[in-house]
Image (cartoon, rainbow, N blue to C red; front, side, top):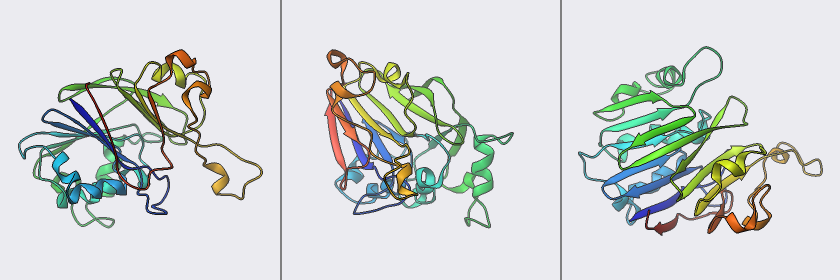
Length: 237
């Protein structure tokens, strides 16, 4: 049995009771997190604290990209768990690697502790398009269209996580056949005031989703800008 909890779904900043993006996938004894926005702080209290595995179990974290609203929760984790933690880090812009960016962010002047001391055992490994093992599941990554780069993630035929991206014609192919799609896109709306014109909910009822035949639409399609409280989706995975 697998359980997916949307801990946060707001882009850019917490607003109207919503926290920034973080998803928790619990499968058996394992926990895999997708992005560590401010929503991950919801693991501090019950009932969501029960998602944390036993202290000796690894927690895997997959970051979609390296903007602050998607990784600010890294500064929270020492107050949330002490489990061994593996952070899967996408590429950065230019010649600096994603893991090197995290090393630069932690350990002063921006944060008092270096990355290596956030929890007793923590590692960061590069991630890119392809398949990556994480506990009992295999996570498939795919490149999205976003300034600085971004990755979408998919776990089997159960769910796909596609956040903070422009529309991309082949996005439907990556997510085709999943039961649950968590998707947010942004684009320019010339009739709306900037800078909010850059971001809008783009998830619509599955039969109308761009490039998606209705007979292959997911069973659940969640707008990543509409959840004010944590939402739980349970399925046999």
